[in-house]
Length: 198
Length: 270
Image (tube, rainbow over all chains, first blue to last red; front, side, top):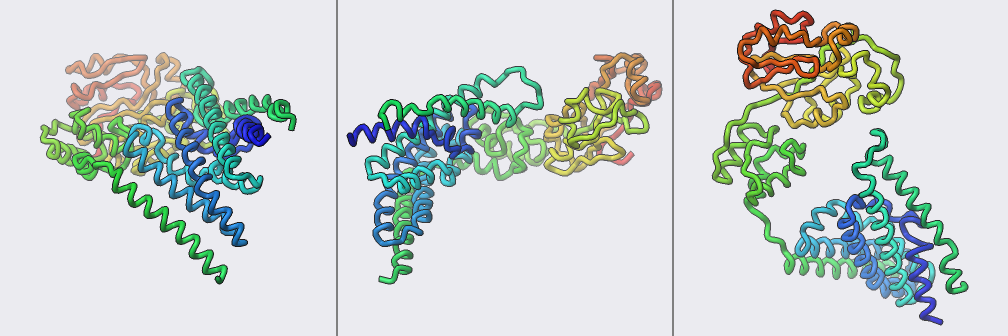
């Protein structure tokens, strides 16, 4: 029963509660780095990594803060941990995958302020998840982020070189495409409940 | 324990641990910096304008230091001094660099070129030109709404008498305005040299052009016949000057019936 719960959390985080397309968190990299599938995958991988590490690192801290009756400190500590982790990811990428580091540009440090990462940590607290559930929720959130990014980068690669009116160029056509892509996720409504009978 | 002190301890301990991890990581995974590229970036203009065709000053410096390009003269904002400095770092010959300036090739001020419609809307050339090519009667004329003025990183452009004008001495030939202008009527012309410049880009047939603007080039070929140096040709119903061949003798200007050709030394007051 517990394992089914984990799977349902994972699946829900990827589909019905998708961070980008259902909760509208992390829109900035969604629009910013989705031009090419390769960078989109790299960005998503970095986000998944940061999400998982942030969850693992903040979980004991959250428990400690709640135990000490200092829940008001949670957000600050979470931001601190996320900022540190992002810096760490930046150093690692700069050393080992400089091309990805170049391609991600300013969006990499922006993961710090990426509401999806803070959002997943906060949601874990709000939903009273235990450690494993939190990790599954983060993994699902990250994977959902990746799914949305890859889907959307595919859409944007198709847009490239298409003959649409000039005033649609750039952000307008991207936003319209994003809206339509988000609509497609409506199709997942009731999926998790249907499978697990929640 | 006092909860405030405990809070301070928890937050600072978290920060300290993370800081230590980062410090260690940055030592272990330090990236060797390309000293040559850094030195080149020092001497480049640092405007990140993209005139060189790379993603910015850092991109150009990296390409130079890695030997992807041996062209030292691509940094037009930096000018010849910059090219020489770059060449010195790389140990290459600098090559000659002609100073250029952008020129808005239109003299169709509102008294010379009428408006075909009354445009009320977003004050941007890009938007206005979407609507039947903009309010101007001439489809190749400067709309004077100032997209280039906003694009110029050096404040070299201004709107004078309803059309854009470049200050040749402030212009660094970074081509930002050329990329921005929806009409494509801005061109690079040699600086400090006496040259004939055709201040009209109208590609319509002569009789159409005359109806639109009193200083529009009608492609009458008079200048082509007058030129002794084969420096001027009519393409797309307008005269185009080859600045390499033009000696600035001014014979073409004398015969020009529309006075769209002008003999100018850009950068020096007429």
